[in-house]
Image (tube, rainbow, N blue to C red; front, side, top):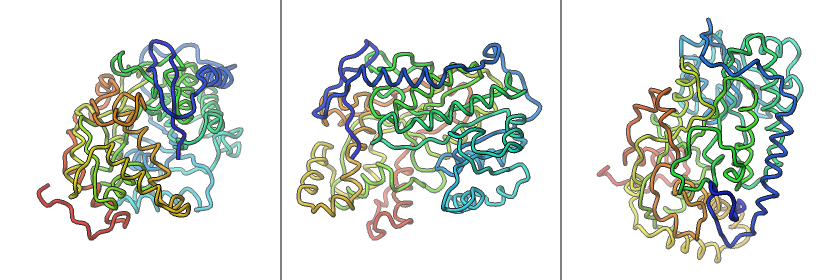
Length: 443
């Protein structure tokens, strides 16, 4: 189970958090964050100054990392289909599952994306490692990449809520290597660098200060909590010091794709829904959610890639029209209980389980992650106990600037029970939830 973050009193911008878990030494955490920021921004050979206006490029040539991941696959498909994009380089770590080209094909096929796009002449797939010199590429490939890329989308980052900040140091090194490549490019003044960040970078934001702004957050206390969120906060700081035209895209929770409801079954919400089916009760949580479908988030990213506007240092991608949690309640035909009661039922089940069952059952290991996700949505991460996630007030992130540069986000329609039903149907289709359980026909 992920370690439960606990935040002691910090700056006025930070929420005071108390839990029964081991207290985090805030100064130790923030000192390490500052240490990594200094280490990986030291000696940056900056471009003369951050551009004051966007200079058009004749061609859009993109480097996309993490293109075999859940978000990256959808971004790749959209880039390949867009006539305004001249060339797409993908860079992924070598894998026992085969070369990147084969993994792309498998991902496209599983998502029912057009595999013919992968035959495009504008796609070049590279196997490397951003944490290594020259990104783990041969000299010729590295120089070609350096000299031709006009947009970098750095989307490769492990999603692990149980690890400390030090676990992510290779990823911070990889970010610095990408920055160094961009700064050494003859196109450095015109390169646009987008970093896939997360609302976890503001995981200890004090909700009394309103919504998280679309700006650089300069107090490390704001990012203290999970090592994952701390690493994203640190990465945002490093990138902001590069002098490149850059923006950290803080994604909210990404939900199932708008087309087929595809939502990876290993994530917290699918596991929570499956467990609810098994226990015969689903938690009722009042309030609103600001989730964005995965493929929509990919479209928003490409909107930002192609925007003529000079980008701010951070953009928050959350749903502009929050929905009620009951879009899920209406998709699961079973008795409803309070979230506190649901957790008590789960704890009772865990108490009766054998050690083998505890290891085999994902929800027991992900209970901390479920608390964290719901609490982040509620602006009250573990504030005073689990009763605080019984109501979700809606938006955590300000997103007016993101709406201004992304028509997709600006025009995004509110999620409805239809989406909730589509997610559950997808989990049944892939065998994650027993297909014999009927969904309410009235949706």
